[in-house]
Image (cartoon, rainbow, N blue to C red; front, side, top):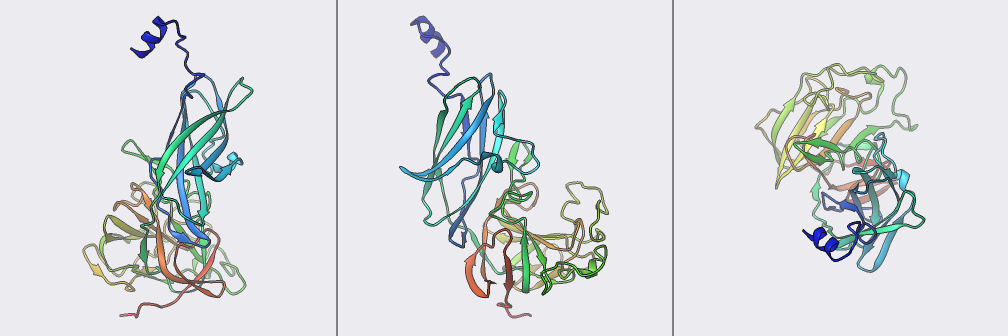
Length: 346
């Protein structure tokens, strides 16, 4: 009806020169856990091109009110790893940008400006996506491990298969592993394994005890998947949704939060569905079920299905980094941390 009125008044129906035909969406408002230097902002920006020709994203501005927080111009490094997505977006196509950074002072909301170039144009066009709320209510947990030299692999603060793992389920885009961590453990020489890499017993992480991060209820246990040998090219069981993550324990933490522990040793799980556990209780042992090398995969979600719900942030009550005790932070990708026995064993 509007287009008909414009045409009758002598206006062109091509209004693309005045209204950018690009839509932007942040489908999960960021919840920023505390980390070194401030608060970690880890979220996704979905950009759709509604033109009948290609566009190229040139830059992304992140603003807090009138203040430019950051301009992102190295666009090619923002797309999910292995997705094949680039800054070039075809007609009626959507791309995903993975945004990650640390803010010294956390604003209550953020605005985003997308600079893009329509093919054939000589100047950029800009579209504004205003008013994304930012929250700080990350759940506080005790660490899931004890001891020193735990290496944070594919962790928060990076663009990796966890943080950029966008999955589709029931018509929604989800990032189940947005804040997931693979904890591997190094020896004193910094190596993760000594000797034959196929022998899981040669990895320092293998066999370490895994602990309840809070008082919780066990809602799911899987304990029948064999360990893979180290450096395995394929898993012992087919890669179905039911088998992903290998043997695992899922805890209901309350308030719509669920913690998942994955890749534990077969036969090592000491709890069953329906059990109540106390913080610090031993749940299982680190294994290599459904994994190429022994480690503990840990994540928190807003639903009981760890691969069909949104990944949520969390902070650990304390840990040690570079010889210093750190309180109420989330460790970032690449950090080496130690966890003290803050909770008495029962």
